[in-house]
Image (tube, one colour):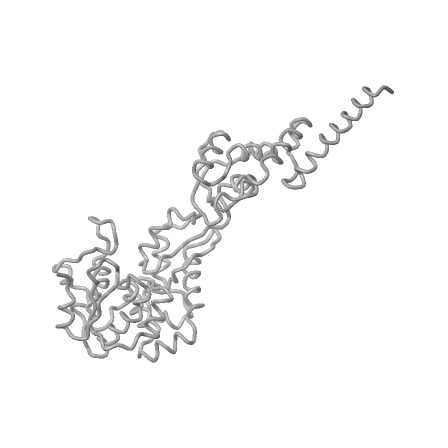
Length: 365
């Protein structure tokens, strides 16, 4: 055998080895290739995936926030890939397209709404786009939200519960809970948190899940703290809901709680703006449930929630307080303060005063 023929045979064997080794290596890292690919296509796309390497397995942003990505009916893979890269959800549109073709997922992307995060890899996102209706959704209740604000967030949550269904369930408190005996709604007891929920959930089950999270956080220590302030759990939650709305900075919550507890002990009216805002309800002019600023006319509203006109606590909580607000009521600061007002520097902090004269002197110039 001539040297030239031997060299050609050796090159052919090397080429065959590469032809077989590349798909094997790609399959080990990225799964089995689509059976619809020809042998040459399998080799080509296997080589491409190995070339892309970290672009397929490295997230675009490990701390990125999950958001909604919508795939239009009939949208091309190239368009989807380009938008994913432009939105910062993937590092490379080309790597994404090549993986889709290699895996055969390019023909089965589902049109519709997808919950994606830049902390996901290209491989993760490619598989996530195969199902536009994930079985679970993330739902967040923000501290201080009232029932209507929670209801308003449902249409975009992925849960198949209407605002009206939720509000109806929220006005039928679950039985067997001592802190809700006699209550007309669960306002105040829907614990602010992030919830991982099954998509197919009834309104009653949703309310029960939120109340159950509250019950889990209602420790014996908290109950004892409320009792030391002379408050039942329901009364403590009502006061905490006011503290939540008054405080801009969480570290001031124990101070604000001390002011209201001092007022209650002295027989003074609470005179809290958020209770009036709750009584006024939705303000169409500002598009919020918490009208601000309030007018002198607003402060005269005839409502049991108007703590400028009526002594003691309002009849129910005015929102759903955070754990920090609940703890502020259970373990308030020990102060001589009866008054507080917003500082004039825009920091969100408050100036506290023992006397009304000192309170007036804290007014902004």
